[in-house]
Image 1: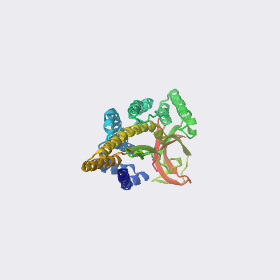
Image 2: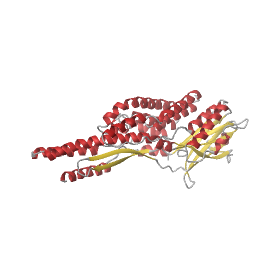
Image 3: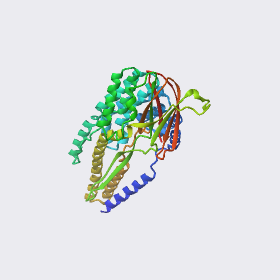
Length: 452
């Protein structure tokens, strides 16, 4: 019992020390730039400190974070280059993950190359599609939406075989067998919305109508993910008055979920085994944005940034949520989390067995010196378990939480769009001004972002 008490004291001490000193990087400067909409400044801070922020195993995260920030900053070609790099690394590291996962059983999952979560992988293509739209390259935008669809079709089976193998190994060691969680996400309203806009701009209304039906189905068949009303503006997307152009506004708000560590510590009744199981939980981040509104003003009424007289607001409408990227992140993570949990259990059993062997040898040793040595080795093994067993909480930092949309019919010409982001009490906490030249039969897309 003395040995058990000693081990518990050391482990508890390490736990509290580790909690009090946990601080990876001070993102205060980055967050300040994000909150003021200075995305290029945030990008430059991160690139300047990249060696402190990212390890050699974080190439996917680095490329993904930079690619999203480049998109927000309007650097669309740079964004495509970085997001393409992230996508290639995801494919490469996923192929390597089978052999890497074996070594991760010995320490923890943070030592392997991060190969991305399902939601990170698929939304790469959405943001690349948006990049191509802004660059006027409609063909490549269509390609990215198709690639998004193809990834989504196979996403639900991505971890099935690995979970089955981990279940079999865990069962052979006397551990629990868990069911494979069901992934509910199979149809994206945002992807369908973008595809509909592209087809409409080409006059392919039959194809646009098919996309609209799939969009309706996304809401009807996935109520847990689309737990809000379908935007009313969708009713008018395919009925544009002659002589006018349809302006579509997409606003991204908030930040996608983060991962936090959950740890379970157990000591067997007889004191033979000490287990620590650490695994990540996905946690949504709260956004202060509760509504988004946009107003359109003819550009000719604005001189040097000020109205020559009270400007004519030709439209003033509210945006409505179209897709919760946060909901989809939570849903698509469940299968991967099950695999991570099983690996953690297998790893914990192996580490506990090693510690137990030293304890048994200490109890059986007739030599006092050797007994102390074996007890010290048991203690060292237990301490190593506590320190080394960590959850992998890596995740993309700058993907948004919610996509809001609306549409406005305007006569051809130049306009200034003011996008207002409001909090729960209706106060404007951020505003963006966008210039657009509206024309018929083309893609008139305006995009805003507020990560608060």
